[in-house]
Image (cartoon, rainbow, N blue to C red; front, side, top):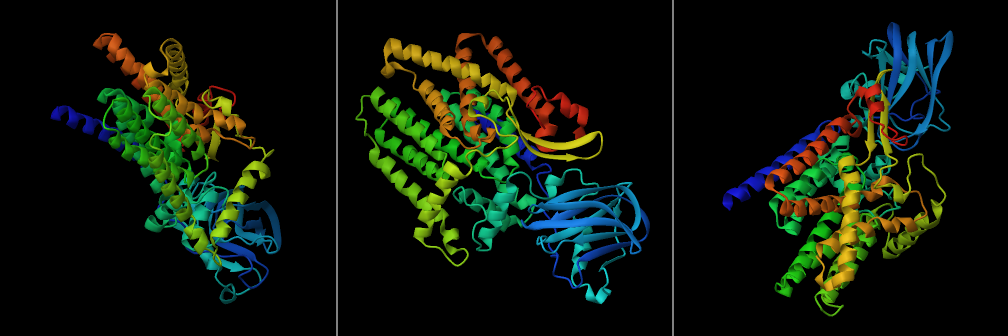
Length: 571
């Protein structure tokens, strides 16, 4: 028995370490420009000139935007006798490298003309790239019409030239992408006691990101590291979930393997938003609630069930303090609790004291998550926190209703993966791209659909024939949890995205595992091993096939296009 236990630990550790290594690979740079310059902070008219000493072939310019404010400027080539416009830029972003193409222009000078009436953003660094993809470092940077001594702090524009790769192939490694602009900006604000930049969701997810920044610095590695660790922690939890549900280490390893190679799980682990923490809290919440059901349904001492039920509700509190969608998970738990009481002929209000205690702690967690907000700015009281809840509700109920997004998708399409969510793209050259897409592993998401349908049929057939009391409680647990984490989005009229579906994915995995466990009991060992081996190989092979487009790894454009199996798989 001890030998088997050691083998389980070794197997789960191998999966966990494998995922950790893959997720850490190129997750983000541990450094970022630390100095900056703001248009208007220098005397003169903010016409900044780069002198390269001799004529150079200038291919493109990389500019680091240090804050969320608007940045507006034009780039000119030539010299003071005749400047010619090469490109213009007018955009707001946050901690992001922006690429400006200049089409291999021959020039000794570059002039950056900032519109100080509109351009208020911090510029962290400007890097000039040659036609041969080399770094061109100017010998002099100055404000037009001013002497070097009068040019103020504009030398900060070129004082950290080696902080970014040239050519800039994977720009996500050096700055924010997708919704990180909101979460990272808010996390940094909390650390500096500023009023929150993003307030449409509760603060816990942003506070966790702030913790990573506090520990590892204000850089992409710092704001993504805890997300990688959260996703990694889900793998051993998934193993324990599968093992406990099916009383089989093989089932646990099978479930953990599928989660390890799910595309969405991987992509979200490397994106500094709240979604991966939601997935972790959800998984732990349902794991402990299933442990509660197991104890109650197996006829063990009911007092042993109190602890896992309490922990489950507390995990709901962590989820709710990150995003209100936790209400869907709580609804699933309460419905399953009632079914369990009916099945075991217990009063419907059994264990209500434990539920209330868990909800009390959840409320405390929610309020505590707002302490940084109460300390921010000029200070806020509990009433401000209450009013913020009305503001959040109004935002989701009315403000964003009717808004559109090119990569939003209807709730019913998520299991089918009819439309992906394109998170990031950078064209390296005419034949190579770096891109990141959020989608599921087809082996899991598409394979989970028939597995869930058959579980639903089994549950309904059994309920009609024998009643709820005689049902295998695992079937309603998987089915109801999945439905309550998915179907309620049909009631939401605002723009929705496929990442909302991610907390439901573990139940697709459990549904597949359920039938693998059933198969093991009905066929010979040889046939079972053959089937499970094929599933695992296909799952891992698909992960390898799609790895470049879920990780940002540079790949040939034609290869990327070959992975677009459906017309709305855009990446």
